[in-house]
Image (cartoon, rainbow, N blue to C red; front, side, top):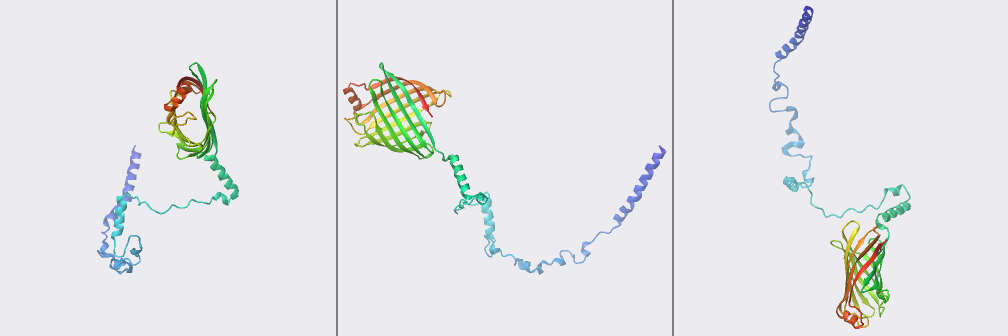
Length: 341
């Protein structure tokens, strides 16, 4: 223990011997009076006499012409402040410009590496795959047997189209009749269809009657599309080579009860502009067809259905039918299959 105490005392004496000279030297240093230093008089720096600088004399900077700066007129310093205030007040956003946009680049870097004609073919193929293809669809919305007053008949209504998103060739056909009496009506239409917006097409072409007394040919002009709330609608005006003018409005709506069970109400209205005694149609609303069909989609393309359909003739058209001993209205039970591919 005595040896350890002696070692500790020796270490403390050595440390005191080393530190004491430095502390004494620091206390003995006089205060440094910077005013006594050459060229460092109070309030002046003789080595840096700004008044003697040619660029800074009389409060002007000759080497910097502020008049050349945007918004800095000679002798005016308010323009930058105004610009700064405007920028700050508008949240830093610049006003909208009116300059035309830059042209679309017409050169492709790949053309500098690969053959230009091959690259053009590749780009055309890519654009075709991304929206330029041609499509088709065949749809039979009605394809059914009708049972009414102890008799059996048939009814069809469908269309097929081929083309792209904008231009299409459309074929339509509809008709019906009895298995004993033959066709009551039948027609086919060939139309050019042009999209006018994402939901509607304008259509124009010809219609040919296949089962009427006159077998008339018509010019057809109309529209077809998807109305708000998912109503499929179409309207067409027909002008025959004999000067007869007819019109038609159609619409239906698919109400999903489940993912596969769908209820479809449907309406079709036919009009005539004048009485046509040869074809037994009267002016105004000639007939109306109302239907309600419930289908089950085995697949999206194949959907058997059942339902009811009410068809009635109106006005002078009903009078013509009565004179011929025909019924003016029919309530039918229908069964069929809806197809598309």
